[in-house]
Image 1 (spheres, each protein chain N blue to C red):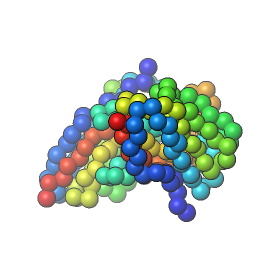
Image 2: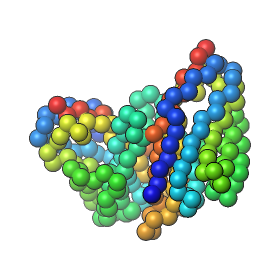
Image 3: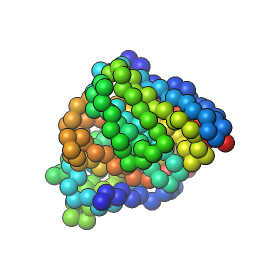
Image 4: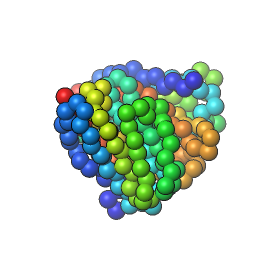
Length: 113
Length: 114
């Protein structure tokens, strides 16, 4: 079955790096995603990585994928107060002509000024 | 473009009452989804649609019905609301079948069932 797990909470100081971790169980995942949810809003896609990649960098964001250990991480460099939000890891795979997406429980990032 | 919109934003129901949540998207997306978000449980898929006139069950479909009569709208119905359906409901849409295709989310509907 599919299971995506994340720690529930992370607190960092402004200017430090944040690392949010995620583990998943389905080795047939094709894409893995990081979504951001700000208070009172829906989820917004931050970045994604194809399962045959190890790393993807996009400005302050670095995604690392360890497919052997089924571990995904999101590093935010120079974390700002505006980065405070809930971050969801998600995986997708084809399932009966449909891309099945499974979300993690979300990690609440608190940035301390 | 408004993207994905949801109506209403908030609602309080009594047990046994019915209601319909409306989701609309103006991006001509084929795929639409209804999720519920509960503390510590992430998002769980209720129902989804792969095109106008089609619907399918997701992970937690019991107690909900959906309809996709028009491509731009996806309705979620609760026939007889229960306290266990207290949650935040998110609608999402997606353009194509490629894996990386982004799901666009609406702002959510906060539903309380007393």
